[in-house]
Image 1 (cartoon, rainbow, N blue to C red):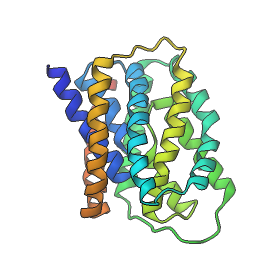
Image 2: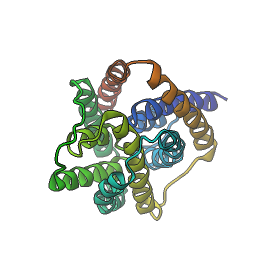
Image 3: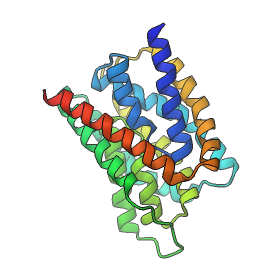
Length: 247
């Protein structure tokens, strides 16, 4: 019963982040699975990808209905990350747990610091294909290696590199997250992963409901306020994971 409650609470938080910010939820999903539900870092990363894919589909549908998804741009951006996601996903299964935990803590801290920086609105300027490809490949690598969707990287890249307005960047990032997560999950399919559906099912159900609430919340609360709250929580999680891995 305790595991069920923890899975529901953690799933709701992940869904709120994905629906409200267009990403960041999976950065909390992995530590929640490790420290609250007893998963190994490798199994937590794989489980996180499943949860993120299923939740992102729901959040994406809502943003698409409102016309906030740049489909062609998102597909091209995601295409650059598919191969890196597959390669990194296959390699992650052969690395020590401590390496995965430390790497995750560093990425989470960087994501939090990025969220605390002032936001820049997109413009209608020229798109830089080289930088867009590099950003897409980097995002795919992070997704495959650590089992995170990468929305915390996708949104600023879509705004700064591909010049999308913030609202469309949030919606489009969900498309990128879904594609990269599916690619990384496919790479992990033959690595003997352990899936506990008694955790995955309630976690995902709560995340799906949370994603709808997050989308509604984003329309009522300033985006920067949500980002700052989430960033400070993320910094605390990163510090916890780093201390745990190095002690």
